[in-house]
Amino acid sequence: MMFQEKLQELAAENVLTVEGWRVLVMLVGKVDFENFIHIKQVQIAEALGMKAPNVSKAFKQLVELNIIEKINHDNINGYRLNYEMGWKGKASNLKTHMKDKRREETNKIIQMAKHVKKAEKATDEK
Image (tube, rainbow, N blue to C red; front, top):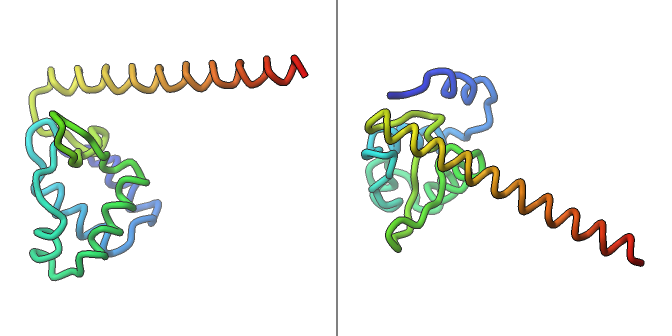
């Protein structure tokens, strides 16, 4: 299930390189359940007739734009398509994933607030 609005926004923003678009389309075509991506960059390079460094740059760009995310799942490093771009799997698993992501974001905000408060306290003591 692709979320057309996100793709339209991405196209309108014009931030992806041609290589980025090519790699993204390949990844969307290869995405597995729960949005895991099980294809190596070298395989993408071969399939698309691209140089490996260009595929690597495209991956970096896709991560920076939060289109894919780097993950460590069961001690295996890999990538996952951002659920806002689309979802392959059960709707109940999407809901769980969304809750987990919101919890992660909330925890990041709390940690940043604690850091700011600690810095302000240190500044006040001077």
